[in-house]
Length: 109
Image (cartoon, rainbow, N blue to C red; front, top):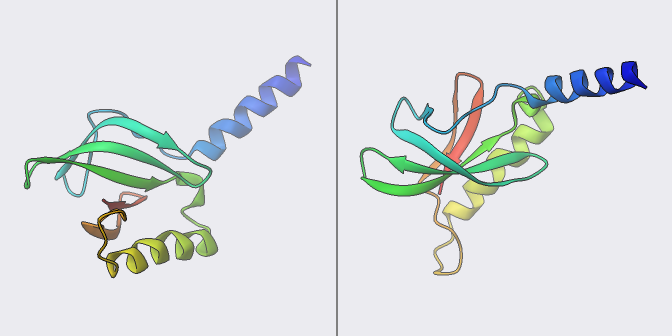
């Protein structure tokens, strides 16, 4: 049982990929991460501060272990491209499309 638990913990660590923390920056230091807003099976949404616009934004970051999966990357980039074309008060506005930096894939809402 102890070995099984150790193996499962190791697998969770490998799936996690690179880990972001509050205070980290994305977008070449433009967006400072404040806190997580939610987690899903593909990505985490962060509350962040846009240092140029001086406003809070949401940054959706693909989980690191999906970065090499082209099917998941295509789905992750397709959503914000389609949403950026829609203007409606009940649909989130995409402020910056999918961007890759230091192994992180993200977009800003």
